Length: 229
Image (cartoon, rainbow, N blue to C red; front, side):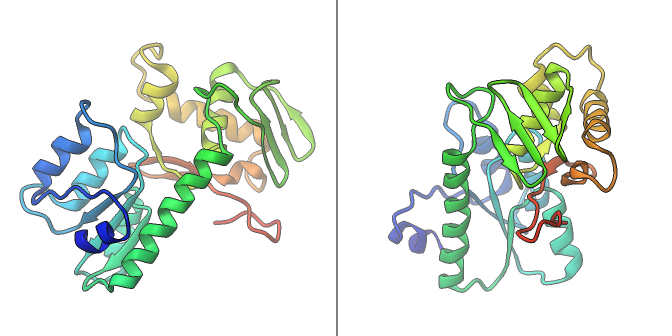
């Protein structure tokens, strides 16, 4: 698989066990990879644990590989924050297609979306929801929504990166730093307030999805106008 991806022009690093992979992925000396291709059944630390640990602090896309094809394994892997799933043996062309699709999606997000750290943040407009980081304004179903500074930053980070899973630890470090008083339910409380202010159940608030034990993500509305599930 590494040879196939290298032949396609990708720079590939290989790790033979979970401990080595974690040291690389959680280290601070090297930049984060653009994509993690993660085997489920690894020695020392398995793929699910690596996925869980990485998702606590990073949003790097994860393509999970496994020899198990049961629905439970797929749900468990995706529930922990994996972005896609392939069952071994993996066909070379399918691997190339999945990797290419994920990397294109990441690049599109980089170009089209801006987070609070960018020099030129852009408004994000989805069906029935608009978030403008320059004017610090939000409209939901045509009405203005008044948000606190942290509520706005949290909402903008989510809507500017649709489909990305953000762990509570990552959100605390990114948006609160040390300014959260040690209250580990800070993120949950702000999400609850956001959903209420955006209109509650049945509104655009439903696009903010909870992944229990993992964190939160924002899902895009479907082309037909109905919110995606």
